Image (cartoon, rainbow, N blue to C red; front, top):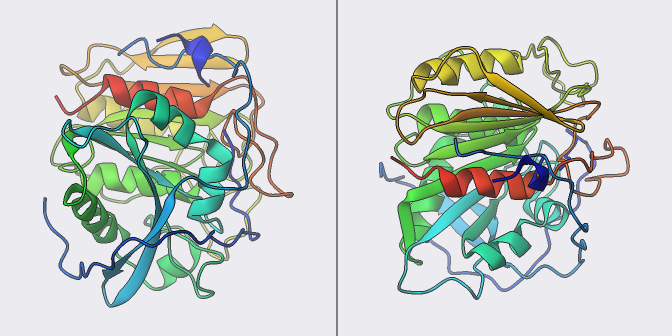
Amino acid sequence: MSLCRLVLPCLLTALALPACAGPALPHVDATQPPANSVQAASPRAPEQTRPASRALPSVRGTLRFGGEERSYRLYVPASVSLTEPAALVVALHGGGGNSANLERKIQMDAIAEQEGFIVVYPNGSGRLGRMLLTWNAGNCCGYALDQSIDDVAFLRALVNHLMGQYPIDPRRVFATGMSNGAMMSYRLACEASDVFAAVAPVAGALNLDVCDPEFPVSVLVIHGTEDQHVRLEGGPPSVSVDPHERVDRSVADALRFWADRDGCDPQPQATQTGEVRHETHSGCLPGLSVELLAIDGGGHAWPGASKFSPRGDAPSQALDASQAVWDFFEAHPRP
């Protein structure tokens, strides 16, 4: 794929839009979770920014898990066949955000409609119901971390629930996320590699003390070089709204780890297209890839999207991260 098609934002913001209501899907009790390179990411600015419509085409669903009602938004495009297995993308909002805001800003639904995959936008948890939601990604963030919420088990249960309702290809289940959601996608790669074939963290860090995936996972990292919330070089955040002290590992550390796990060359090959640097670790095990899209001057944002909040960093428009993420996923089903 062309990098010119690709290289969106979410801030670990304390301001969050409440999740929009919609037609509810059936309640399900899931207190017992089941076990169950390409030329990637060429940096291309979006030819035309997809409009951020206020009306969402998705539906709101709920899942009973761990004694709590967890919610999500689900988009099943008309292009999905009820007989042919489709890919599933799990998209995770940032700390303080929610599913509706992420869906509205990153505009992944339009790509799903064109390409024929399903997108689910789960909600994290928080003290205020639908507001200020977070994920327990290991050392971040907020309520989910304080309460030791088992979000890995919840997301496993959600995927299993959706597989029971729709023809989803188990070899094509993927996770992406922004900020705290990106950290959570890393955790899924570490602890649910039997479910997720590839992950694409945007503006996050791999901060787990132990990461021992059972199966290899392809990884695309998207990060701005001037991100002050999760710094490219690692270390404590220069800007943070989370009360927990945190020291992030560098993006380079994450790439080295996954390159080693996936049998790739430790030294990446790099190309530069405009503001986007594309690094690829070649020589990986068959069907796997580890890649970086670094946006020169980019902040804590999802490239190609609109701002997640008035306080959020302005996203670079040098890359359409939503398209980059899907192109990477499409090329990396489970080997």
